[in-house]
Image (tube, rainbow, N blue to C red; front, side, top):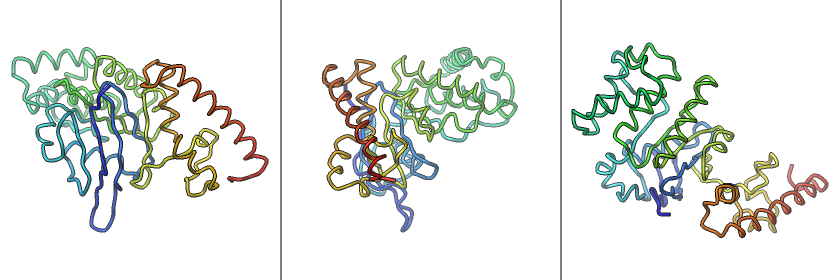
Length: 290
């Protein structure tokens, strides 16, 4: 499976402050990639660089075959749903979708057809006939997602799509995300909800203070311990089996979609689970990590 996105050494500086600090990762074509971190960790800044909304200070990326210098060409293949809805308040939902379709260069004969289809698909027929500002926050988020996919992008960037909305609307949006992915859309999802990432994502990565953090699987026992605070003899293991790797293996084993043989996935998972359980018991007794 090839990469829809590959990032190497991506860095963003604002004066002397470094918001994103040389991160490396890749997103496989056709997957939902979870980008987790607390508020202010650098998630939105990373998306802004990858979509051309912010300049890259250092490093590079390859997005559907285009680098930072060709981002204008890449934009026709990507969809963006920012953390705040960006549609026009006075226009109704239908006109907003048609306007976004025009911005993406869709022919006039297709704009109304696609807008109507998306409104029906998302259950927003009524919202399409009233001003955007008259809708609930959940409906606004769904309309914004519809606007981001009206041109059938190869990869969709979703920046915290369920933050600040009610439980029912969040559930509907998660369902929409899964349906979009099943239709072939690669999705780059930022969130600070770990349970949401577990429900939706094939793979996940963590960013904290602009750095990719390699947490050992001790995270699953409720421990957030930086590698530098681990006993020296455990540090190589922490780098060999970070949380992202463990999550990848678990998801691959369940979906039979990993690059390793399925039997090897199970062997690694069983061995690591035994180690995790044993180390957790020893940790409680010895109080290595508090």
